[in-house]
Structures are given as C-alpha cells and as structure tokens.
Amino acid sequence: MSFGLLIQTAIRRIMGIAQDHCGWRDEAPAEHPEKRRLIQAAESIEILRYNAGWTKVKIRNKPGKLFGGLTGAIVYEGDFTPFWPVLDAAVILDIGRGTTYGFGQISFQQLNDVKNNESEFPFQ
Image 1 (tube, rainbow, N blue to C red):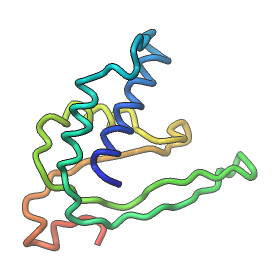
Image 2: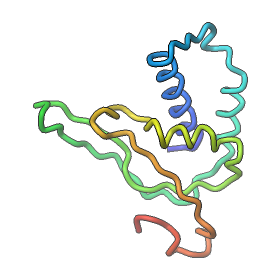
Image 3: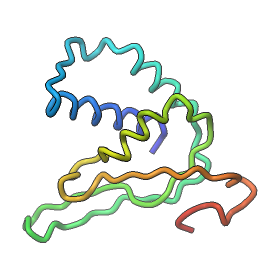
C-alpha cells in the first residue's frame, strides 16, 4: 500500500466520521486544495520494506460473511511532519472496513535506521 493511498484512505475515514457523527457537511467535496496537496505530498514517501499481505477472516456470528484486509508491516521513508495529524487520527479512529468488528486498526512506530539494521524491522 503506497503511503499516498494510506493518507487518502485516512482522510476519507476522518471526513466520513465528521459527516456521520459530528453534523459536518462537505459543501464542495472536490474542492479541497489542502487535501489534494497532502495526498500529492504523500506520494513522495517511499516504501522501504514491505512485509504485508491480504488476509480474509470469517465472522463467526455472521455466516457467509468474510472480511479481508492488509496485515503485516510496511516501512516508509521520508518526512512525515505534515502527515502526523492525519496519522494520529487514523490510529484513534481506525481506517478500514469492519471497524465495528475490530478491524481497520493501524499503528505507527518510528524506526531509527532500518536500512542498515535489519533487527529494527518489525514482523520479521
């Protein structure tokens, strides 16, 4: 998952919650220069390591209902300064489908030197 897609998904989730639960109405959904600028800037963040995959989970109380999602670890490299407010909100709100079932969880960890130290990489 590119960092740009991660930021775009987090922003969409934040805006959806603001609309559904806080009474906020987006009068011009396509007119968000700040959002577009943030997503474009996120494209400059590169994936350094990728150890994640798509998994499916069956819900025991919902016969025939499967949820899928990305699990594992992805290490990104770049300047995250403009993204921390969105990332912090993503951790609190979760950003995927099925969050009411406990899915969509995300966490971030700052690593010191993953390029030169394999032991820093989580989920070996």
